[in-house]
Length: 278
Image 1 (cartoon, helix red, strand yellow):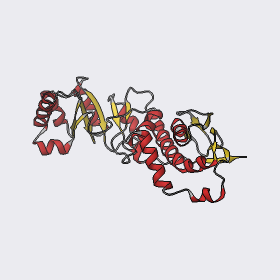
Image 2: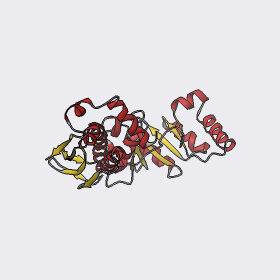
Image 3: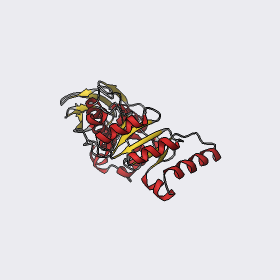
């Protein structure tokens, strides 16, 4: 969904026929200032988006950034100051906080994973385990935290997973039909195929026709064997049940990518608040 339309829809969901709390006690043209206060340690994300939201509602909003996206923050830090109509500030407050808190939580958790493998070449990838209609924000937060985006959706990369392979009748058949489909439709998309065992890896190595092999639910020991077998002939990706406690073991295998759905779906929102300034 286009960003501006998402914001308009989200505000409509919250405001409907009016922000009656504000309408009841604040005059329409009263101006106000507010600051965004950080209440937890972590990586800040969504400052640029917050400015955009305010300016969608009131283009003349004054927005002063003190901390940029991607910065480490601590309790008591002031991220920005905004000056606008009080009605605008109070309309935007909850939507802006919901987005920034969620994004900052994801960026912070992603950063923890990235720091764990800083001495290895592997890159941390997100997955499609995202919130419907909120995927763009979540994947932006991964980038801010130092990770990388996998595919945005089903449309921008071929990923032949276990169910595709089983429904199609085998790895080789799935690969062949996929390459034929791409040729027929004049599409230039990378092909990734899931391998569940070392035997699957051997099949892919013998057959070819893909760009990356996803090694799903491999132990670090078996992953090492698979990486040696592949010998850089294809890109490699480790996936499945990898945690902060185990990720360094996987990175030490010299795999190219490690996908971790948890950096989005296990992230806890950062505590932030918008406070009026008199």
